[in-house]
Image 1 (tube, rainbow, N blue to C red):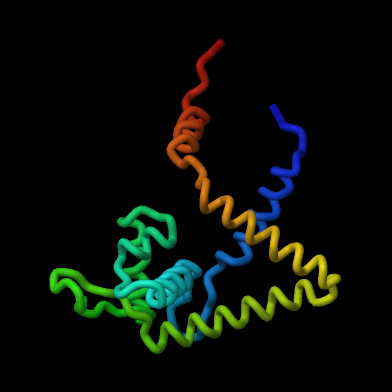
Image 2 (cartoon, rainbow, N blue to C red):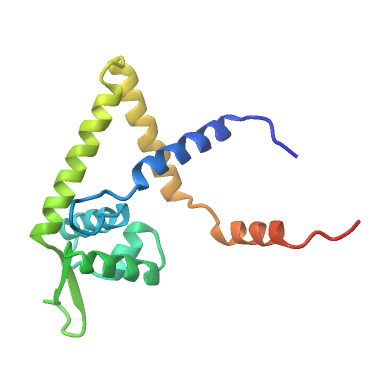
Length: 169
């Protein structure tokens, strides 16, 4: 059964295309690739550092809207790449805090600058009102998605159901 094309379908296709574009590993010569997940961790640690006393893996998990175990894996990858480091907590001796390293700061700055310049180039010939409308609506869309995340448990159920062996009818 194929559903009729809808506005949601068009948005879904566009988002998949954009995700593929942004999710590609960012290559560097001689070093391991910089993954978008590294940039996401850097962004989270940087943003949280300006908003709270100490950045923890739990804070990164919440900011990225992922499970703590996933955040731990992502942070460990960023640690291994030398983009963040652990330091003793200044508040609780049993905890550690995360800090962006100078190498991580350089990567975050260059990736952010490049992405913004690239986005500017894509819409450079657009009418200013269209550019503003895109920014406003995309921000609104992102806020709606953050406020009402997809039900991953329901999606897991649907996938499990779809993968079941067909029952002869």
